[in-house]
Length: 402
Image (cartoon, rainbow, N blue to C red; front, side, top):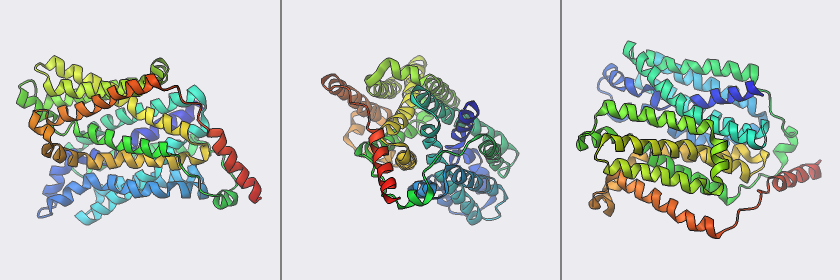
């Protein structure tokens, strides 16, 4: 099972690489295609994320028909061809087509990957794997972005070579990842579709809001530091690295983190992230900014795996792909919505209270975290999720049809 877990970590490390990896090469790409509308150049970053959202909608159906491992292999092939193929494009439209194919591959592999811990692991081990997968998402994005930046120095075409790492991941999937057990294909196809509980959709919505808030953080950090006279773009780069390292560390020890805080974990993480934003917003010294970013890293490192753990607890194995797809759609919709969040904050009254971007987001997240405390104190712990009930009902339907 160690090789299975390692394969899941490797897949996780490339799941958020799609859009931002070629960001350092955008200037060179624009120079190579003179006269092209700047919006099309920016779409090279956003198009993969846009394509992910509709792709998650059919991932559950194709997994029921063909099985998770074949779908994962097909998705990785699309990912590799779409990613590396961009470096061979001779027109902006070919390049956009390759980016769309990359998004299709990403939208295929991400929900399948995050549903696999429920197939191979149980109990605390499953929570451990989910936490470490989130950790590798964070550190993988940081490492691959740096690698793409170095390749961009050679050529804008070379920057697309970073996607070749998916070939190694594909090899690991073929060699080390066992095929998850699944119901008989005809029976699975004729069984009634599993309805997801409202909790899953609520978690998808909170993931969207949380991701929109998080991805708004780096957009204005360097300008905020320069206006406050406590740093510059180089300082912002160091702060992003700090956040990634702390988020990675939290993901690696997430089960212990979850066991210690219990039901209070969500409130604690929201208070950490909200407090971090507020400290960055009103910090007068570099030390306070660094401390605020530490809190943001703790929130980032815990909130993502917590969402996936809660979704796994809310549904049975037969519904994990469908349920995880909701979270994945929320994740990438939040990334896409982040720039619009900046525009919204400029128009709301909070902007006139000198709260700014970080103060506005931090105030909302802190208020939600504080609001959860009395709710948690006045309510009992929820009973164990009816995972077995859902599974047994589905199994009964399949048996009855047979």
